[in-house]
Image: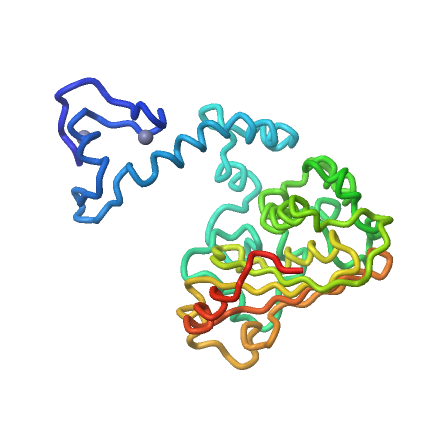
Length: 293
Ligand SMILES: [Zn+2]
Ligand SMILES: [Zn+2]
C-alpha cells in the first residue's frame, strides 16, 4: 500500500487513463518494477498505448452497445458486464452457468466431459433468444446473409430471427469476429453467388476462455454456405488441462466438435481440432496462416 502524498494525483498525459497518487509513483510505475507485494510488474510503458487506443475507440464501442436494450445496465456511466450477468443470475464460476460461467485458467476443462452442453444448458436463455443450430423448434435462417448486409449486430439479429434483447453478442463476438475477418478478405459469399464447394482451415493460435464454449463456433457453418471448415485451436493451457483426460472425453476425440448446417442453409460443416501439446503447437505455428482457402 502506497502512502506517498507529496503532490496532487497524476493522470498519464499520453493515455489519460492511468492514474497515480503522486508523480513519484507515476515515474516508478513507468518501467518494469516490483510492487509492494513483491510481484514483478511490466510497467505502464508496455500498456500505455493500449489504454490510449481503448479510450479512442470507446465512442465506437458505445455506439455498438447502444443497439441493445440490455446495454442500459450501467455503473458509473458504462455498461457493466458483471452487473448484467448478476441480474440474470449468471455471474460466477459455477459450471451450471453454462457458457456464462467465469472459467479460469487452465482453460478447456469443459472438454474433459463426454458431451457438449445442450444449447439450452449452454445459453441459459429463453428459447427465442438462443441462436439455435438445431432446428427442431424453429425454421432455419435464410441461406447465408448477403455479406454486404451483414454490417452490424442488428442485421445479424434480423437474419437469425433473434430479438435485440438477446445478449448472445457477449459470447458470439468470438465466431463473428472470424466472420468479419473473412469478410474483409473477401471470403464471405453472397447468398446467390454460385460457388463450388470449398474447404477452409481456420487457425486460432492463442485461444483463451472461448475453448470452454466451442459449440458456438458452429455458427460459422451457418454463416458460410457450401464450406467445409476445419478449425484448429491452440491454447497455452491445454497441456495442463488435458494431462489426465479420459479416453471418453471430448478432448480425446480426433475432432472435439462437429456440426453440419441444414441443407437449405448451404449444408456447411465445421470440425474443431485441438492442438494439445507444445511440440505440435510450434509445428502448427510454423505452418499456420490465420486463414487459408
Ligand atoms: Zn503511490
Ligand atoms: Zn499512459
